[in-house]
Length: 91
Length: 195
Image (tube, rainbow over all chains, first blue to last red; front, top):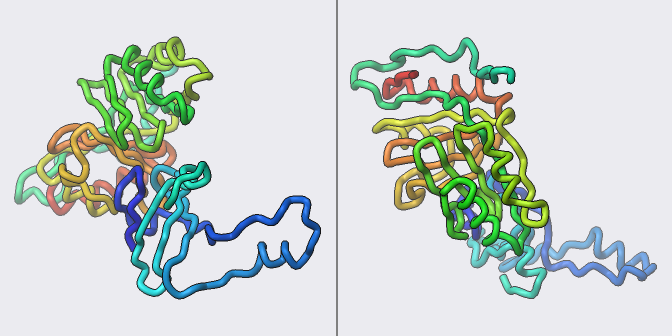
């Protein structure tokens, strides 16, 4: 699998570290509902088709990325810096 | 000041090695006497830092991924957003950079004692390096003077494209002797000279 890093360009997946599901929303910090926190920590949907994921380009520019990947074909439709997404951009 | 010893040590054997039938495919040597400084700009200070690097070294860069400049023994290149290697054969390089780059603009780390620089040149340089690193070394993908950060068997390395047949490899000092031997094995096929 080749991931096209926004800084480094296309690189083999061995340079990247998977960092999990990028679609989760952290619960309200003051929440003490154990079911909500349990779902946040443990539940994953494992969808077929497009999925947003965090990846770290650990073997290159060391930037955190948000990758949109098709879970059935591994085709990657977008890659963006996670910090740009966090500040309001779109992957 | 104590003289920095090469970590390659007894593995550094000058002369011709490997397959001599086709001539010398690559020439390899360690670049010594360099100052290697890493500069990391804050996200909103990159243009000022590039201007400051230009004023300290004479090598002016635009803010473009991987862009670099080379002038004789001096070089500079980016390898991540806001991160640059600045290299020169002068022990005052760090002081010179600190005089123009305050902590408000960037952090400065002297990596002189932490990296070994190996220059690989010759008509088969791309071929040999392609055995070791999973990146495209051709000029259209890796233009001259540009820099890269990548892996060699899970170990980080930086590479700068110096001219059409020459690359500088920045490897960890503690890893340099092992890497030097691996490089020699990779180059045996094409014949190599150690200067």
